[in-house]
Structure formats: structure tokens, C-alpha cells
Amino acid sequence: MTRLRALFAALVAATLVMGLSMLPASADDLDDRLADAQRQKDSASEALDQVTGDLAETDEALAQAYIDLQTIEAELPVAEATLDKANAAYETAQREADSLAQRLTDAETEEATLVDTIAENETASTDAHNAVAEMARQAARGDMGISSLEFVVGAKTTDEFVTQYNMSTTAIRTQNSSLEDLRQTQAVTSNTQVRLDAVKDAISTLKTDADAKVVEADAAKTEAADAKADVERLITEQSAKKKTIETRKKTEEARQVELTTQNDDLTAEIQDIIGLQEAERARIAKEQEEARKAAEAAAAAATPPASSGGGGAPAPAPAPAPAPAPPASGGTLSFPTAIPHITSSYGWRLHPVLGYYRLHAGTDFRAYCGTPIYAAASGTVQWATWRDGFGYQVLLDNGVANGASLMTSYNHLTSFAVSGGQSVSTGDLLGYSGNTGLGTACHLHFEVYVNGATVDPMTMLG
Image (cartoon, rainbow, N blue to C red; front, side, top):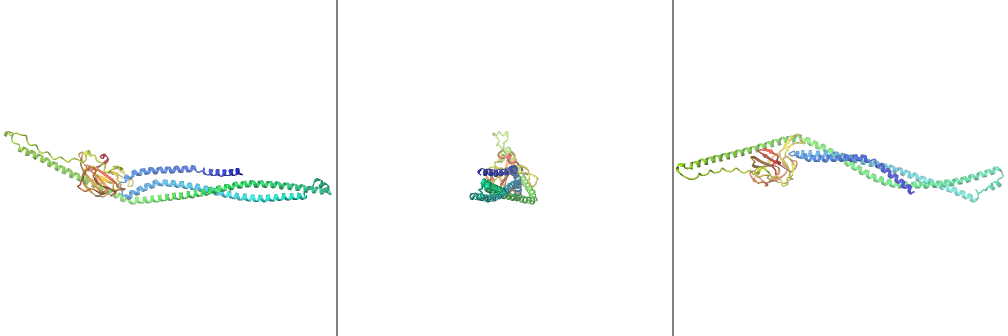
């Protein structure tokens, strides 16, 4: 009996294993697809980090919508692969749950049949047992105990002898048959009981497995529903972000034209300042030259003729006034933040939303809101004021370095620590970083002007 139960349980387990063995091939494919989608998402995230710098001086809402859209479109393949995997897991779990439920039903049907069979066999066994017992009682009473001699002596005729003999033979055959039926019925009942016990064990196992599989299927169904909701949410957000981009695109194009105009105006103002400075330097040089010549003439007039016999050397001419020393030695600038971390470099780049190239005319430094901003070189504060696009801006006139006019600007500040006309030294506090003007987050946009034209600040920072 124990051996039959073990065999039946082994068959159940083997069937379960066979059912599960059909999953890995498709599951591996789904895992590979999910892993590939995740790798693509990671690559897109890295690329997006680089693109974020290209969105500098872009309307914050538009830039954020673009960043969100790129993030969504990177997440969507991962969400779709997750959904496919969740659906496959649910379908597999549900299929196995249905199979276990059907097998459980079949086993319970077989159990009922075996119970009925055992009951029938017990009835038959009882009947056969009663029949044998009755024949035994008849034999004890002598009703069937006719000897061969009694057949011969007691029979009056030959026919009577034959009849009695046949009756006796039939009774013996019936008795033997009843005994055989009883033995067979008992054997069948015993075997059926063993089978019934094995089926009951299998039913217990199937119920446990079926209950667990139903729980697994329900969990997989919930995961699939969540994954589907996630995909639908991403698609809805994707549509909304695209709409936002299209809605704000024309406005941003106009703003970029305005920003270009502001850059041109700033360049023109700086050029005017440089022109005024050059004119002032020329005026000073002219006055110095005229003073030198006048001094030489006065000295010559005061010198007595050689024939007078007066001795002594002529008085020296006064030295010209020295030119102001350049504040930045060799053009080297100090970093404008205590911890310089570059987020966007100087150069031409393709605007990811508007689709055209433009010059990013400075270097962006990571400067969280309220970070102190310092003078990169000594000089004079030309202005500390609001300028559209640049936000709050400090422009420093750093004088002449290596024969060229040098100026630096500090943009998107949230507040000032200096004012126009103030003299500052290298490292003096100018203000605090912010996100004023056109920007996507708090940072410092640092520009360097040599003779009024922007240059890559990194060529002069050190």
C-alpha cells in the first residue's frame, strides 16, 4: 500500500515538473527583452544628462517637458517588457491552476467511484459470505451430506440416483464458486482500498498545490494589472508632454530670437564700453605726451646758454604717469565657485527641441540655489542688474590683460553682494546663484569677453 501511494505521488510530482518545464524558453526570451530594454533606458538616461546642458537658457517648462518626454520614452519599453513578462507569468500560473483544478476534480471523481466500488464489493462480499455460511449450516444439518453409498442404496430407481447425484454436484460447485467469489471480492476490495488511499493522498497534495497556484495566479494577475496601468500612464503622459512641447515651441522660438537680440545688445554695450575706455586711454596718453613735451620745452628754456659759463647738468624731465597695471596677470582667471563642477561647456550645440545650432557662449557651473559666487579676477563692477534672459547679472570690467580688454559676467544670480562702480579683488563675493532669467535649474552661467567677444572660459581659468 505504501509503495502504491509513493508511486502515485511521484507521478503527480512528475506531471507538475513537466508542466513547469515548458516555461523557461519563453521566460528567458522575456527576461532578455526586459534586460535589453533596461540597458537602453540606462543609455538614454546617460545621453539625457548630456542633452540637459543643451537646454540651458531654454524656457523651464519647455525644457522640463522635453526631459520628461525623453525619460518617459526610455521607460516605456521597460514597462512594456515588464507587462509582457507579467502577462506571461499570469497566463502560466492560471493555466497551471486550471490544470491542477481539473486534476483535482478528476481525482475527487475517482475517489467517489472507488468509494462506491468498495461499498459494492463489501455488499457482494457480505452476500458471498452469507451464502457460504448458509451452505455450511446446511451441511451441518445433513441436508447436503449425502454419501456415495447413500446415493446407491437410497435411490429407488436409476433416474432418481442420477438426479440426486446431479443435485449434490451442483451444490458442491455452488459452494466452491461462492468461496471463490468471496476470495476474489475480498482481494479486489483490498486493492481498491489501497488505490483509494493513494488517491486520497494525491487529493491532499493537489489541494495544497492548487491553493498555492491560485494565490500565485492572483498575485501575477495583480502584477500584470499594475504593469498595464503603468504602461497606460506612461502613454498618457507621453501624449501630454508632446502636446506641451508643441504648444510652447513657437513661444520658445520667439524667446530664443529675443535672447539672441539680448546677446547682441550686450556685446554692443561691451564694445561701447571698450570704445569709451580706449578713447579715455588715448586722451590720457595724449595729455601725458603734451605734458612731457611742455616739460621738455620748459626745461630747455630754463637752461642757460653754454657761453655763460654756467656749470651743472640740466634738470631731468618729469616721468610720464604710469599706465594702470592689468588686474589679471597673464589673463589667468580664478574659478568663480568654491567647488568647480562643469555641467555645460562653451561651444556650438544642437538645440534638442528647436532643432537648430546655437552658441552656448559660456561655461555652466553646478551651483545649487544660494551658492556663493566669487570674482574670477579683480576689477570694477560695471553693473549689477537684471537683464532679460541672463536674469540677475554682474558684469566685471577686469581691465587690460595681455594687451586686450578683459571682462567677465556672472549670470542667473538670485541676489547681489556688490553694486555698480564698486572695485573688487579676486575671490571677493559678488552674489549668490539662482535660476533667474532663462534657465532650467539653479546654476552659474559664466562668460568671458576678450575685446568684447566671448571666448571659452576654460582657456583662461586655472
